Image 1 (cartoon, protein in one colour):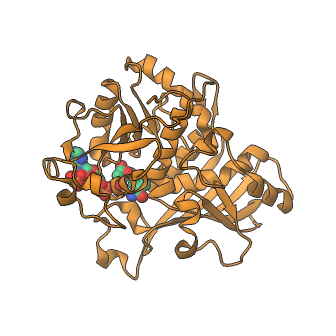
Image 2: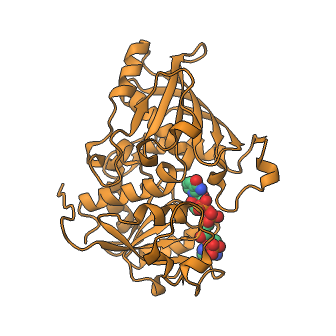
Length: 360
Ligand code: NAP
């Protein structure tokens, strides 16, 4: 594979669709001063279009980058956007048609929405886990008749991202047969303004619409086998129960796992500790030093203390212990709008640059 990382050349102009939302804002923050990409265009709904980004957005965190603040928000129409690399943080009610239109126009779309995740010809990627699935792009282009350069790459549901990263080392080393996962998910996972404050504060809501089925199918696709033409989903069963909790950022997942091949606890711990993922995802601008950090402190990971690990790109795993029902149980925490959304998309794009699929 040709690796072609930009070196001293001008940055690649990108557009952010859904730039005003919780994930869209995270894109803008993470792309400020990015060495390879520069935000040239922002787009959102008709409600925001025509305003400056500063006026359209209810900016949530840190400083709003001045060069983006001045941009005029566009509508999400390929005819209005020049960039050939498009990060999508669109609401799923509109993402399907819009993302397809951009791919059809020759843009590479890095999507956070659910619409295309389970399509057989669309890669659903966490680079450290399954970067090889990106080769589905040529299958996709042939199947859909999209022009060279056009395509859609998705990243997973934010809780599924955390669980997939925590499961990948064990699936690679021993095989996973069954997973029981309970999540405690931050309010920022519901976007902005998201969950009404009187529902969120001092409360736990044991329901997030459509979330459990996402966990129960996306893990199998990401940990599935790609033969160059199609993905065969990993053949393990997943049972998920999800909860919304009054935490700002960070999805915590409690996992109980039955392995295909039983293993002693020290080997299980070793598999988690030594995992660094696919080397193609290492050393990129958004790569953390370690995709997975293992803590042995009895009361960690905690949302408040560990969500920012690796600038939000590291998933922290802890409380590893034998499980009386399955083989092993443990807890994994990840940042939902960074690793689980915008940061994950940007890392996908960086791998595509490294592979020469996205060119300056
Ligand atoms: P959000 O805060 O509600 O933002 C939604 C964005 O979509 C806004 O920019 C909004 O623009 C735009 N939009 C809404 N209707 C539109 C329309 N008709 N045409 C064009 N743009 C429209 O949601 P979010 O949490 O950022 O989530 C964005 C996407 O990422 C969703 O698909 C979500 O499922 C996914 N996701 C979210 C997370 C997370 O942790 N939040 C994690 C993973 C994936 P206006 O401001 O103009 O209305």
